[in-house]
Length: 415
Ligand SMILES: *Cc1c(COP(=O)(O)O)cnc(C)c1O
Figure 1 (cartoon, rainbow, N blue to C red):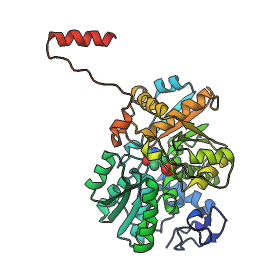
Figure 2: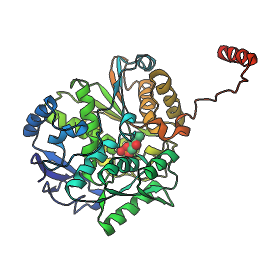
Figure 3: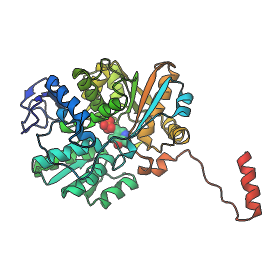
Figure 4: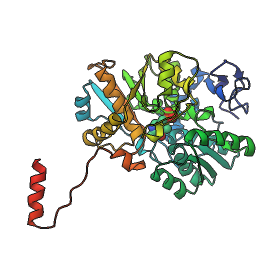
């Protein structure tokens, strides 16, 4: 049944080991705080992965199946996720002042965010288990991703979102036919309600920070990036951080690649949080073995989290790669969105622009030097939140359709 390369599921808190196919979502002893992690027989997986990359039997991120927790012969899906484009925008590189700069634009995945990487793997898992209803709590992208990728599979999707979800994300959900419930509260309230619904109805839980299958999907972001770079690691990979699942997943992807001998050196992960939502940053700085929830205030909704769930994997990713955490202001995020647009032609939602804001801050602090190479994970499309994305973009002046109009255009262009 389960991929025979999986050797165990291990609790990230107490180290307890579970059988690969055990039904546990989280550790029996540690409860919701004990998220699990998949361990593989890397020697065998490496041989299979090399063969698969040479002549693929699957599409997109599912090509990494030798290191995904899916049963052999898992069912195929309607959508293909990945590869997303890897750009090398030179004007942006010169502006930042590093020796090479890549932008991995996951805003071009099927539902326009990085979350598709996790959703597609969860959907394969759910289908293999014969589940017909899937459940998620989300700030928006995880939900719209699940809804869009599940639609062609005939799977019913139940979503709980916070009251304040951006319009485009809600529009995606409703258009994809998900049963959407807006919770009168924050993302964290929605999340807690989803755990209760999981307990009561037993649906497949696509919750980031709980179900370990999701981080395994997220690790394909690192695998695909490194594959596109011919497995030559950049010095740094920059990742925006809310719950910490993307950061933790990227760390796991790099760890797997190193264990399998695809890379001989770890790129360092730079995790970027908004100043108004910086709980993981605080835990990393203080070295505490716990997180202190704080009411989030950033306009970058996809990284606005009061109580991060996957912080342990996130901090482990920073430690394993010799990386760092950094915070940026909302103004810096809004400015970064403009730079991505103007110097790279990349329309990125605020959370995704936080990567560039973090890189600029790391350059200003001297954390990243001018001779280093950097890959930016740009995790979501600006069309998800056009008001947030274009916050600092200015207005379009109105001109008359006459000769006076041309004079005005000429005058305004000179200003
Ligand atoms: C979810 C999301 C993030 C943050 O991911 P976490 O796993 O919550 O840290 C960043 N950017 C975008 C666009 C997202 O949708």
